[in-house]
Length: 119
Image 1 (cartoon, rainbow, N blue to C red):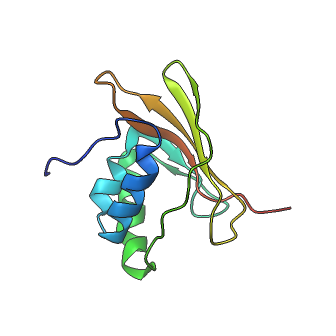
Image 2 (cartoon, rainbow, N blue to C red):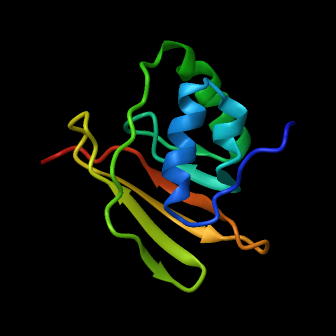
């Protein structure tokens, strides 16, 4: 595994996600998540754990279009937890992640809700 940039701020995770998704780097995407992270994807189900998240992205990325950066909404931080969100350009309603500061000061995703459907 090569040395990859780590998120120094919670907001860095969104930028790193877009960069790695566009590079079709499933391993790099998985490294943005804690070992036991939960991602609410595919819609209607959950993918649990970094290894499962990497496997999911390995299957999906070859068929996915290029990701475009989305401007972040203000981040909410409470101690070592933060809530990040972006208003999606694809009409998915919203995207939100709970992220946690790691012992080295960097940030990783703990919970990822990539799509909230509008009621």
